[in-house]
Image (cartoon, rainbow over all chains, first blue to last red; front, side, top):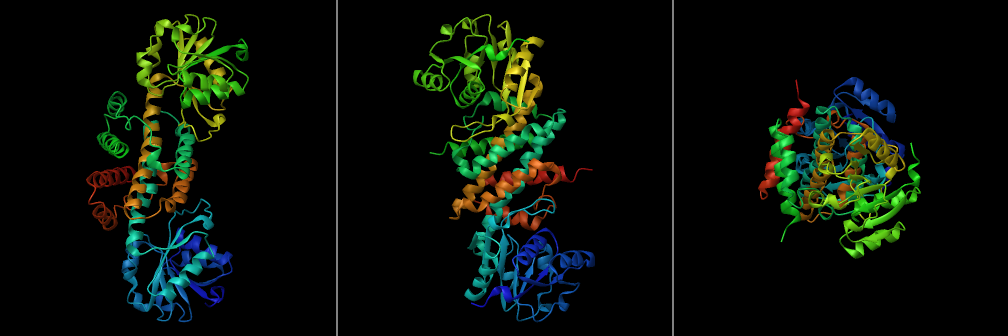
Length: 261
Length: 261
């Protein structure tokens, strides 16, 4: 296989994921030639960081580019005019929920999905991020596997159907977990209590789930269907019917899942 | 104030919380004189660890004990015959959800609540655990504050009403968060995927919530009411009506809470 460190990569998009991937590849000595974004200032900002050329339109991407990483919202991904992209390049997207086949008018395509939440102001150890890779051919898949392995120790071949399921599980793990923190924050604020009290508990709960099977370590009133506490809690939530409904539903699921035959 | 390190403490209970508190106080040089548990082997096990006398019945607790920490289930706490306890001692419980007044037939009573999840096989840094303290008199409250401060840097006076609200928020933060992990684990297993993929995401999601306001950093399809992904996910969950209902409800709550006027 060719030495991928001699290739040129272009990014379409300049958000959190594009920025983390582009800067990390750049640090690993991979040449990021171009950064394409509709917003000139965003293209310029990321391009400067990785010593690339900022580009405003897809049709201006050089035909010499080897790999194009499209890292934009799912909605924007569906709207992109793929026929404007250079024909020779290996084109991949970074979405968890979009099927690889949306790229199938291209000759060479694949998926380069980092299963992690990225934001501007938190540092992520990219070497620990699971990369889920797919390619339309064995060769393209291998190229993307090698590219991902420059960044992470945790690179796997994952097909679109598996990736969709992972993305759904990731929504529970990340977005819905944060929703639980957020409801707790709301409840504390309603009583004038500092959310700070709960931060050690957030940490310990996550730490346990990292070293155990979460289903094996479930605790709380719902596991033992302790109606005394459950009813007291639901009563406390009385002014918020959504929270009340949520409390009952999660408690039902916990009880069912931990008391399976 | 008297030097609390010269006092004697008895524990009623020998579970995870009792074990962590007794061993930590013992390490700090506080004398744990007695450990009372209905189950002889449990009483013996903890008593040996803290150089105490194992006791099987409440009425055998020495009348010379200064502080008695009752660390048992809420249900057992309601059933305990408090009149059997020595009259002079300061009696406290460690429950998040039980009002201090359940102890009001005692002369001296209070609450010694560590807001954390304890289990046998994970190490907790007790110095970071928030202790919520209450006492029936200023003097008893101060005694328990001092005792807690031997263990933790994070000790507060919290009344029973506030503590009940904290406990409810803690159920969302710990039990319900673990339920989200557990559902994610279930979804992964249903597709033959390793839960390991999600562990870096668990860690990062918790890390973000420890350094930010969770309501300010909520992400995911629900925030922008992205019906395309939401409907796809709900369709994926079709075989599990509870998960489907849960997905819709949490998404509704996230949308409402992040799009408040």
